[in-house]
Image (tube, rainbow over all chains, first blue to last red; front, side):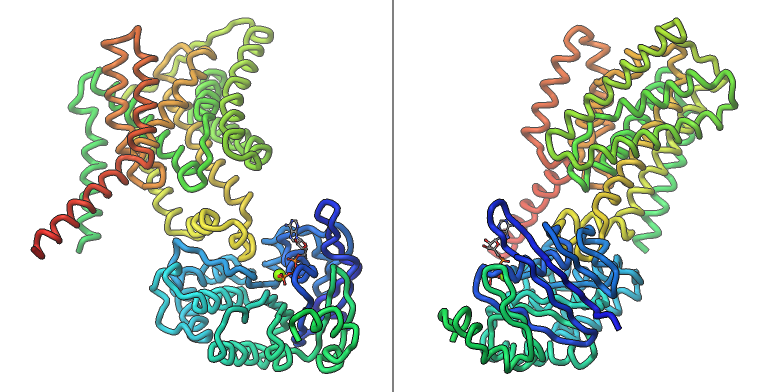
Length: 242
Length: 312
Ligand SMILES: Nc1ncnc2c1ncn2[C@@H]1O[C@H](COP(=O)(O)OP(=O)(O)OP(=O)(O)O)[C@@H](O)[C@H]1O
Ligand SMILES: [Mg+2]
């Protein structure tokens, strides 16, 4: 059986800087994989290439065996990859519900009109924003904007969900709620790749972890093993995150 | 209740406009024709440029293509077919131009569209001189001014309805998302290039039809007349004056400006261009977002003063 996501030799250069250097890994359907590494190690750049916001300088990305690397983002989105952004991206001129409808209206099996409104309401309830669809998106608090962004990603009905530090900036109570929310997504069978600095969340959510430093992959395995790996501790956990 | 009233009002308005030829003399009908033409052009211009923010000076390129199709084909083909062919050619040119230019941003797009109109004018001139052997063409069609007016009116109404419908459709939502954040737009599955191209093509096809419908009025056409860049500038300034992002904006800009231009060109034929330029500058400086926004702001201010007055 082919993996849902298969990445081989993925590379991205910015001028002289090699931000991602020959990274290979695969993700099976239903897996929740953590992508870890110190600041600037290339995690967001990997997600950007998977979602199509950046074109790889080299290497391959396959979804269900189909090569999607280099495709424009809207085509990749329609294939079933959805994401949230490290710096939350809302659509400020739209209402909360309309923010969700955008993803419903342009996905592969689109919803529009009353169907879309009802689906948006359900998704908002799922992320804890029930009944708040008519509010202006720009008036939401930071955590609620993050929730809305997650609901928008889920609205695409993705095969693969990419979360870029979705739990960053939450207080301990919010973090607990956030972890439970992602755990419920995992239990519903969705495949997730999440970039995360919060170790509590990584331990609670990820069966497997991949660690990068300076653009290269240095570890890939069961979370407990990876977090015990001396090289990982030296490269990552040693530098102020321990 | 309110919707029924609006619908009734609009139907009355359309009926009144449609019956205008029965009450007007030749001069009045000429004015109404010009008005209908420019309202349609400005609305079609805003259809693309309003939501995308691309400033196009290609209006007259398409108007001219439409007029030349009629001039060249109306002796050999039936009129409805000529209109259809004109629309098809306008659409084809728009698709080619759109595919090659919608990647350009800002001022480059403006310059390109301006150059496009000139290029097409030079090509037509070259063709007429070297192949046909004459520069001008006569259009002899048994189409009355009334019929031209009614066609323009119908096209104008269709254009308004189209804009209204787009505002409520998925394309309309796509445009809002693109306006807010192009990264999010592409990540929810919106094909940004195709959306812009579709709007540009629709807008250009309507402009081509305006030229084709108006052509019989001129009787004699030559490239310098039908590809006159002033048309592009007038359309632009009308849409901007009213507000290109509003449904009724282009109409509210086109009506007063068209009448003003008519008056200026009748009374100050020698200084017409200078006055036009001055007016252009004035509008862009004084009302950058258009009259409708301006009125809304004033209205908002007045209301706020009312409120504070009521409280004190
Ligand atoms: N668009 C870009 N242009 C130039 N350099 C970039 C660009 N995006 C990322 N980089 C560089 O690539 C490297 C990797 O960045 P990236 O954002 O992928 O790191 P990260 O692992 O997500 O870090 P963080 O944990 O801080 O989010 C950094 O040195 C960064 O400065
Ligand atoms: Mg990052």
